[in-house]
Length: 182
Image 1: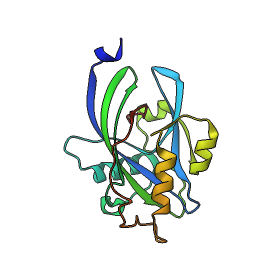
Image 2: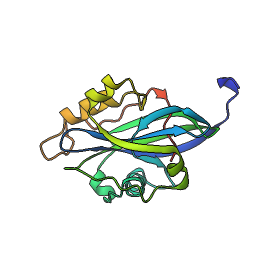
Image 3: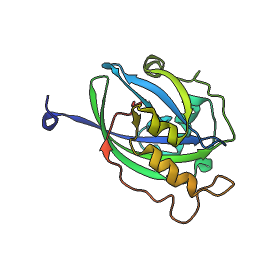
Image 4: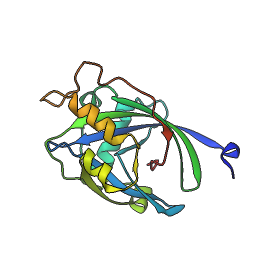
């Protein structure tokens, strides 16, 4: 099927950029069950329930996928907005998603809350610096992730909160997709 004949399922999502004291971001390594050779790294997060506010969904997904429980208010405002199109398990999605920044001293990831689809499509996790991502040659989503992290982390104050100089302003993403829709 060519791209002009695709039928997209609209979806809203929320993702969390979990960054530790060493400036590393937590990413999961996964694949599309319909294309197991298509492997990639992605941030914690996923689809929102109907009418669910982005920060609430981001906090819910973070707890389910990492065991890290925070309140939506601890996530603050979205630091980036992205529109993306991707396929997962044979379904094409058109997703609008907010990204939240959460600084933690460290965190031991607990995946006990994974859904069946997450258990079947996520092979592991790792903490990455933006420079490691760029040098790795690995596929990651969003493709703008290293530049986004560099911008956000350079604008963060010592307490880890985003600076009020506009660093948290939203911008539209590239529309290139591939995130696991979990």
